[in-house]
Amino acid sequence: SPDGATIASAGSDARSFVWDATSGEVVHQFPLSDRAWGIAYSPDGTRLATGSLSALTIWDTATGVAINEIEYEQDSALHVHFSADGSHLIAAGVDGILRILEIASGRLVQEIVADQQVLQGSAVNPDGTILATAASGSDVRLWDYHGGERLLTLKGAGEGVNLVDFSPDGRQVYFGEQ
Image (cartoon, rainbow, N blue to C red; front, side):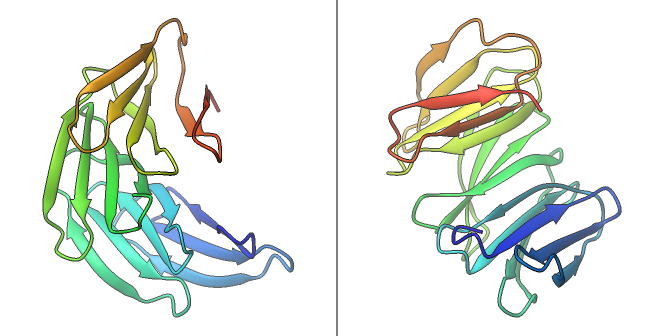
């Protein structure tokens, strides 16, 4: 979680968990309809998003109750994260498309065709203006969050890139493989 008090996990057993980071005790268990591929905390830590083969679900971290489920008819969301202001959910899919959805309504706001293989990682910079995508066997790419235009390609990232993130000040991009 953003405050370091809890740790969230998603698994192939159609369950996600929130753990107390100090005691290691399970705080919440979230039953899912199928395998969870992606999981992310909202910037303020009050919500948790899970992405699976068929749905994106937003959970209340205090109560463990699902507060919104967005049907996801596209290929599975391998990676999910919240926008910098917490109002949108970004889902990176196996189809190479980055989808930005409004959380309140579930409405698709924008699709960015990343022209990459399976998107395994994505991130948004702290001020919410740039998205980064990573795909196995591909370069890392930076995108304009609002317009969807490609800003920069980091060539030679190598095979197996599936993690990407921004530094806290947004001036650097980190990438690698797990």
